[in-house]
Image 1: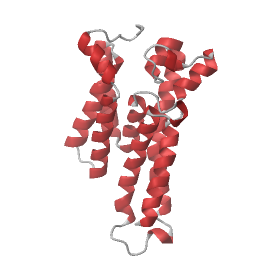
Image 2 (image 1 turned 45 degrees about the horizontal axis):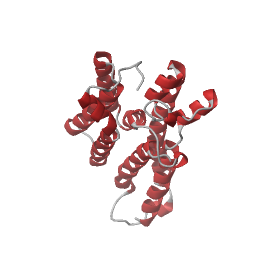
Image 3 (image 1 turned 90 degrees about the vertical axis):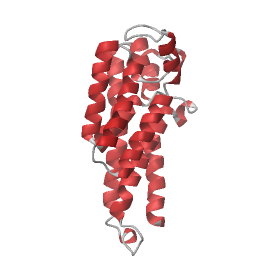
Image 4 (image 1 turned 30 degrees about the vertical axis):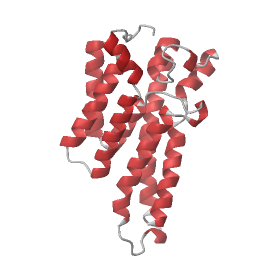
Length: 220
């Protein structure tokens, strides 16, 4: 148990650092030598990059942010598989390594979300974690990730409001993980991650209620 507990902490730290890579901030510095947090919605996510720097940089940020989440889950799975072959992982314990692995993978996914939204490199500021959350979902359970992505695309096409589409996608992920056959750790991760993404959009919710939330292509 101590072995797997130590491994979980190490993987969570690694996933947090991976998620905390400030893609939007770095793109702003590299392309225009600006701090993206001083422009638009002050987020480091792809939507604010789109408003501030254009489509190409925004697409690059979106892809990297999705890959960060997916990489955290894939790496955690690989490390769990590798560690399970170690002698230290297999002495008589209350739980088998296969029982620990899903919990550790979910912890890594949640840490990646937290890293993106609260980056240690940006004084614990960052993006809304929607793209990174999509990457986590796709790597963890592609049916849930695909369903959430489909809702995002449809909602964006109808409303042209990225924040609303992101929150609807997060809520759809919660619905899907609740009705589909998924391990308990995955369900808890999706529910916690979905709530976290919605909470990161508190300012957007206020603007949506007041009718001032900008649509795609409009400035804040």
